[in-house]
Image (cartoon, rainbow, N blue to C red; front, side, top):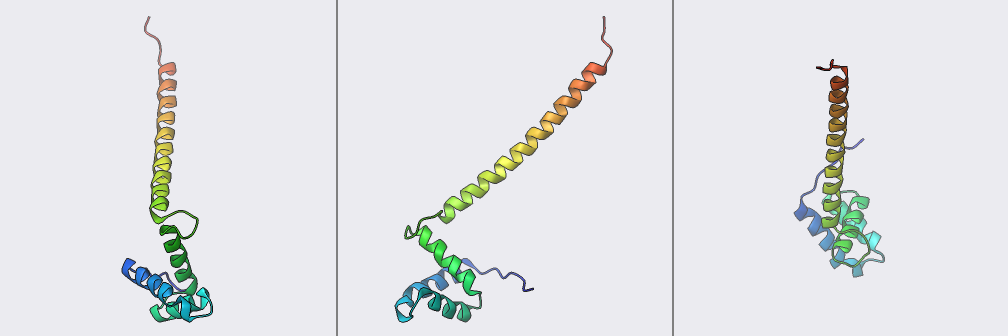
Length: 107
């Protein structure tokens, strides 16, 4: 199995720009994507996803922009952390409440 290669933002932007610039020279967008992907050394499907995301970012296609995706990820991370904190507090509260009940009363 091939390991993932991280491409820089500049390479991604250049590849998407190449697809857009040469789109009229090919019979389909997929043909352009395959050609450019081969030249930059990435999978055609990867480049197709970059192109689709760029279209969303520029408002040419319906979907979430990159900024919206990042915001959602951050919010989901925050929710996960808050739920963990609430669970810890709930367990601590139950532990101390039980300890208070087990303690003999001072009368």
